[in-house]
Length: 467
Ligand code: BG6
Image (cartoon, rainbow, N blue to C red; front, side, top):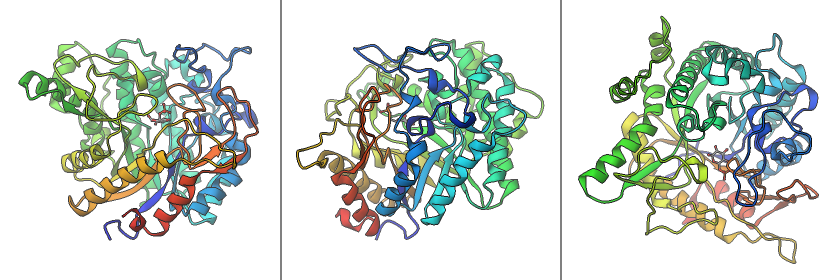
C-alpha cells in the first residue's frame, strides 16, 4: 500500500475565490476585489476602487459565506481528511492595519474551522492567497516594510485564536508568483520594475520567517509550510544554450523556495541582484530572522510543465502570467491551453524532495474544464477523473518507487470556484458543480458530479481503487 495510513486526502480553495460577501460583516476590500472578469479576449482589469457599474467576480464568487455548511458537509461526505482553505486578512483586519481584529470575521472562521473539526477534517490554512488588503496601498502594499509588520500581527492574531484547532499553516500562496503575477502575489502591478518585485518578495520572506517562528512558539505542534507555484520545466533541446536557458529559468523560480527552506538567499540570486544593481532593504537582524524562520514542509501547486531554452528569459505573459516561448509537442492541452503532464508530477516531487529533503505536499492540482449538465441533471466528468487518476498514480510511484515522504494531496477546487487568472466561473475544477455562470447569474445550487463519487472511493480505499 504506497499511500501511508495518515495520508492527507482533501481539497483546496481560497477565500476570495469562494466566499463572496466581499464587504459583509465588516470585511474590507482586497486586491482580489478590484479585479474584473476577463472577457472578449481582454485580460482582467484592475480598478483603483470598486466601481459601481463594473462586475467583479469575487464579490459573490460561489457564496460560500452563506453556503459553507452545505459545502463542508459535502467535503465530509467525500471523506476529506484535510481541507485547505485561506483566511481573508480583510475579514480579520479590514484595512490590514486596524488596531483591533474584526470580531465578525473571526466568528465566521470559528464556525468554518469548528465544523471541519466536527467532521474530523484537519484544516490547513493559507494566511494570504492573492488578497492583500487595499488599505495597505498607503504603504505601497508589500513594497513597504509596514505591510510585513501588519501581516505578522494578523498572523499572530489568528494563530493564537485557533491554537489547538489549526496545526497546519501556509504563509503565502505561490510566493514565486511575485515574478509572474505580482498583483495577485502582493499588490505590485505586473508592469512594475524588477526592483519593486524583489523588494516586495523580500518583505514577504521576512514576514513568513517571523510567522514560522511565532507559530512554533505559540504551539510546538504547529507545522508551517511554504507554498510554491510548480513551474517545473524541461530544456527545449540538448543544446548547451537550451540547457542553460532552462537552468536560468529554474533559478528564477526556485530561489523563492531556496530562501524559505534554507533561510538565506542563494549566492546565484545575490550575484544577479548585484548585476541588476538592486539593493535589498535589509535591516539589522534580518539575516537571523530568515535563518530562524525556515519552513517545516514544502507544499506546491502542480498543473503543468514548461519547456525552456535560450529564448526563455524574461518572458512573463499569457495564461497564468507565464509563457516560456516553447511548446511541448508530446503533451495534450486543456481547454485553456495548459499542457497536461501527469508524469511531470513525479518529476516535480523528486526535484523538490531531493533538493531540500523536507516532507512535501501537493496542495493544488486539477483540471479546469467546461462541464455540461446533461438531461438527467448530472455532470459526467470522466475527463476530470482521468486527469486526476493519472496524476495520483504518479504520486503513488513517487512514494513507492522513489521513497518520497508525501504528506498529502488536496485537489484544487473540490467545488467549482472562480478562476484566479480570468475570473471565469466556467473554468470548473470541482467534484461539486455550482449552478452559476461567469456573470454571477444562477441558482447557486450544488450538484455532485461523477468525480465526486469517484474521489470518495479513492479516499475510502486510501488510493487502492486507483489501480
Ligand atoms: C493557482 C492558484 O495558481 O492556480 C489558484 O493558487 C488558482 O488560486 C489555480 O485558482 C488555478 O488557476 P486558474 O487561473 O485556473 O484559477
